[in-house]
Image (cartoon, one colour):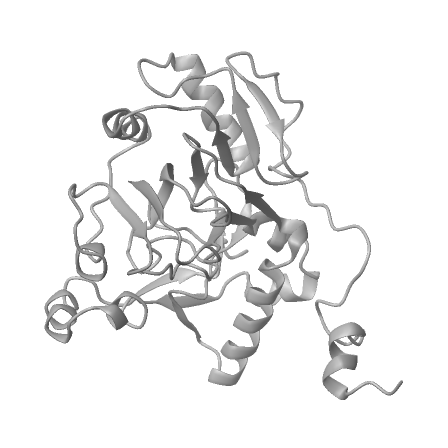
Length: 319
């Protein structure tokens, strides 16, 4: 059988492709810093070798000890996204847990694209036969801002009988497993991020015009360094990254397509099948997420609270 050029390229990528590769693809799940002590406040069950872990033996409402919080932070840095089952808690408990990690964001756009929001610091993502899901692309939250989210806490309020999973991709593992020559190309590049073509597409023109001066395009490093660990992560995403600066439009397009395709490798991903009273807590700096929109016309309701982060820092140039 003769394959078409497209089929051949898909099944038999040439070795000239910088991302060509088969076989083991396992990156360290955190920056190596010696032997880590065991977790004593709860149990940690990894879901994949590099990203995602289920945490058991802990309830997220009420008071959490300093030791428990320190271990949760360590687990978050190690696994990037933590899953908690059987957390029958209220919105006030949800907010209380999120506040332990920093100041809470007040998202400026959801009141326009999904009316009915009741709290400034809680985004209710309600999808049904009248409002279909649109978050099914890989993204970090709020990279259109000067201080993108540090983390987010997502609580299942109502889930469909099947479908509606959420996936996360480890952008540190993705960086680690790039060829060295590509890492050298991107280590000191900067990209522009913007919200207008994403959120603005679903907003009235007068609202976009009113918000534009307050939220202009911003610039962030293509490779971000996580200060807690020194880990380098890819920090470009389909939703909000517009272009890489300092290179031609053709090179920007080439690099972004390459990096987006690389981030989508299953080896860097974890997938959560939601159950009632499940909570996901993720480090928005070091992973992207994707909400599968395969449950229409069933109803899916999630409450998300995000924590404000620091200004992203890039790789320091050698002197």
